[in-house]
Image (tube, rainbow, N blue to C red; front, side, top):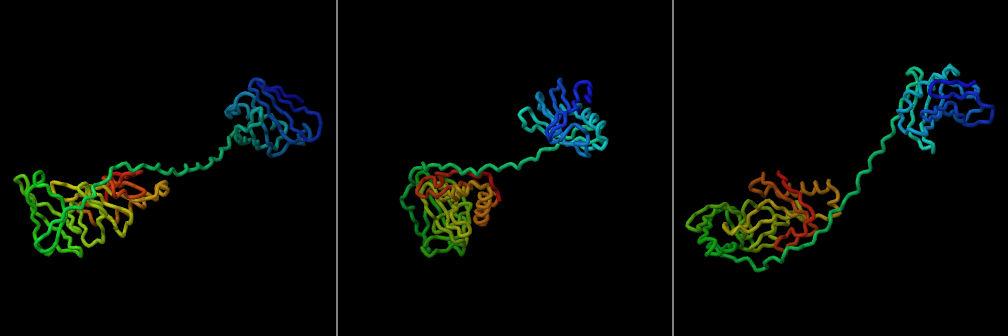
Length: 328
């Protein structure tokens, strides 16, 4: 028996044969074909059941919305032949058999197609990117020894002095706050009196191994002056953060080396491909150096290097990554 319905042709009369795929409905206008696969013949007894899987082939539209009006008519047609039918699992393909969509249509919902949501594959995180190597281009630093000045109490301190351009006198008071280190270098904190260009100032300095420092209070921390010259001083050997250094440019108006917030951090580039490792390393360095800062809220700039360029004007030359504006 053939069923003619507006817009499509139902082909229910099929000769008996071995199990095969039978075209049940064809819509010339929409170029849609509906098949029941692996049935023996067209008799309802061979395909009628509560659940009837349908394969729908579209030779035109690839949008599953094409089934919104089409599938309810197919469902009503099948229900006339098979009263038990209540579920129509469907798969929509193109002419090549490529799956376009799948879903179900139920009798209780008027055979309206409900598309099955495609499983979303988890996104593969991007591969870590190792920062590119950066050449060391800074020129060689001044290697001349820092001038040494002796104090009456036997200690000495180190600084650069140009009487014509930088001032005329520096007075360092004696007291319990200042003491001589094992090498004779002055250690401790004190306000000094600086006279230059007819003006007097009393900057607070922290002396370490004879070097006057500004904005840094070394105290009893076991550190080391890695290198020092008229351009800058590098302070390091912090046991709580090995491979990290404070950079103190020389401030000629104070005859001292002043910390401006730049921290140099040694870290292999391969490790820097992991942002969590960068964060952990920066936090370690912050915790190690924070107790030495006279202004704890000073913004810091961390320069990541593979190796300190201690013999260059800029010891951070070759830095491959900067982490800026970090505060405690």
